[in-house]
Image (cartoon, rainbow, N blue to C red; front, side, top):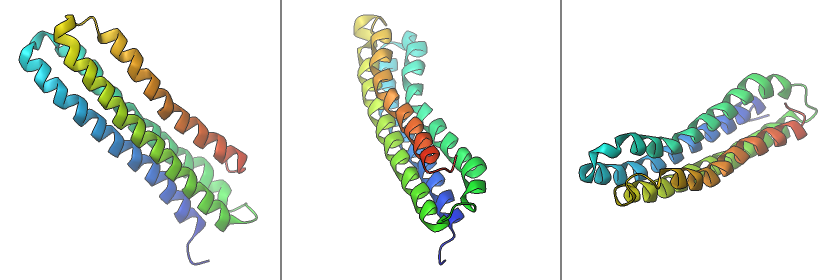
Length: 159
């Protein structure tokens, strides 16, 4: 085979991590921009701002978990598959789907957090719980990206 199945699987895991890293960077950047403006107006909101700015970071961990599972659990099982080449491409596809889930989840979570951050001074911090709850809805999509990837790898017989 021209391309090793293990290389394709590793690439899929790396792409999943990359999606989480890119999405988290975008989300933190968006929330951080709102945080700078809010802290210039009311420095006492630092604790609340840190909570909201850090929320989009979790998708990076989901991408890392996917990469580690592929490297430690999937690749050792890949050689035993009847069509290892096709399985390598399937793992790559799972990684791409996970990357999209993590990227968009983190980026849009940053938008929600930025809105909450911008309202902290006006509400004297009372918006924090509501903003976190709204951000958790988008977080769920990142978690589902991780869960669906694990389910897909299990259904392929690789996990």
